[in-house]
Structures are given as C-alpha cells and as structure tokens.
Length: 217
Image 1 (cartoon, one colour):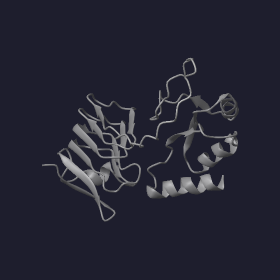
Image 2 (cartoon, helix red, strand yellow):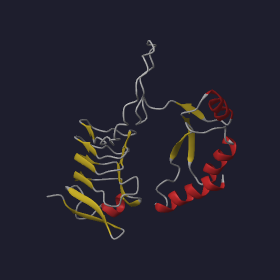
Image 3 (cartoon, helix red, strand yellow):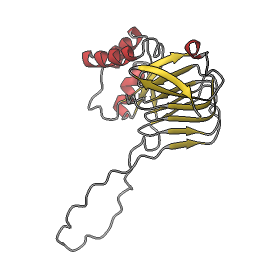
Image 4 (cartoon, one colour):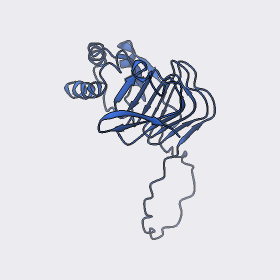
C-alpha cells in the first residue's frame, strides 16, 4: 500500500488538478494473490480518484473485487499483446537436433489511424505510437497517445501526447479549441489557450519544461 500510494502521489504531482476525480481501472492480470481491495479503494478516495474496477482478474480476484464494490471488467481482445494460437494435437515427430536459436526481432509498433469524429465521452489511447485522427475531437472527448497526436480537424476536447513521459512528443491540430492539452504531464486548460492560436491551426510542443504554441504552417 505504501508503494502504491507513493506511485500515485508521484503521478498526481506531475499534473495537479488534472487527475481530480479521474476514473481508474486496475489491471490485476499479474497479481499472484488478492490484494486488500477495500484498502485500495479507500486510498483512491483519499487521493480524490474514482476506482471503477479491475480488469484481467481470475475468478478469485473477481470475487474479491466485487465484494469490495468494484466492477470486474473485461480486457480488450489482446490488450496490446501477442496471443498464441491454441495448441493442436499432433503426432510426436522423430527426434532431431534442435536448430540454432533465431535472432529476436522487435516488431515495430504501428501508429493508429482513425477516420471519424471522436464524440463526447469517448476516450482513445494509443500505447507506444502516434495517434492520427481524420476528424474532429468533440468537447468531452479525450485522445491520449504515448507518441504524437495529429488531428486533421477541430480539437474541442482533451489531447494528451507523450503520455509515457516523452517530452519530445507534439500535438498538431487544424483548429485548436481544446478543453485541455498536455505533453508528458505538463498541461494547459482552455482558459490558457484562448489567445493568438484559438480557432486556428497550431503545433503544441514542450520546450524547457514549458508548453509552446506555434503556427502549424
């Protein structure tokens, strides 16, 4: 609990106020035993976070979470991981000398393209890559990427680039009317954005720890 509290406080300190009452789901896929969900829920309440539920839980963890009043949610189809095909029964081959180990090749992470508008209440997150949106990000919508964010339309919701902490990432949009922009934990709210670039195309970057807006073209 002490380690969890320290981690959460460190994350909250990166953007005071930004995570206020933010909904959170805990991935317990690798948990070896059921933690004290009641204590965790109380910690989140004290930090003014809303613990919605858990994902990746086995039957025992689901039961423990539900007893604490938490939802047991389903992980996405592959949760960004490679899924092995089910094993098939085959005849045992004759013994042969094992081949030399193949070199390990790291697959490139593909950027995510979305060719539609992102509506209010929707949240898109891209891990380890850029997010490219051919449409509008509506008010109340949230787009998040570990990489850069490109919006070929209006940005009226929230855009968070460099979510993994990479301060070199940028946000590009054709019509900047954002509720919030953030890069690597540094953020500005709408009130700070309503100036020279409001309603215009803009590029948002982080320089010397400060957000900077510039002309896109």
